[in-house]
Amino acid sequence: MKVLIAVICSGLWIYFRTSDCYKMIPRGHIFPIFFVMSWTYLNYYEPLFLPIGLLILIAYSKFLKGLH
Image (cartoon, rainbow, N blue to C red; front, side, top):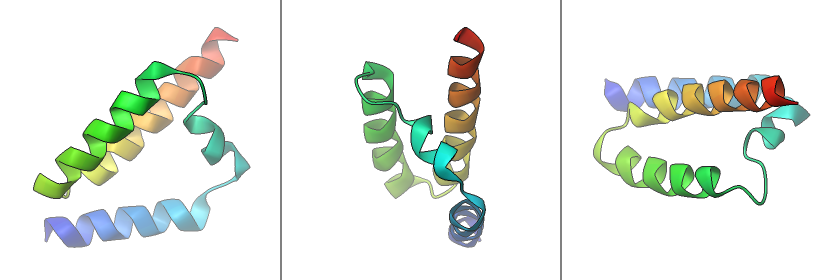
């Protein structure tokens, strides 16, 4: 069931993504590098880390927008 939830969340994200989605992981920042590496590792052990990670990325991108 967890895998199905992760697959559906990733499919919805792909379907509704915009060009802004690619800006969620900015180049030249250290946090996104370690976040994506950790996220990939954790996703192998717990599929629900995929939707959790997507939510964190969205929150992080909104936080960065608030700084500018």
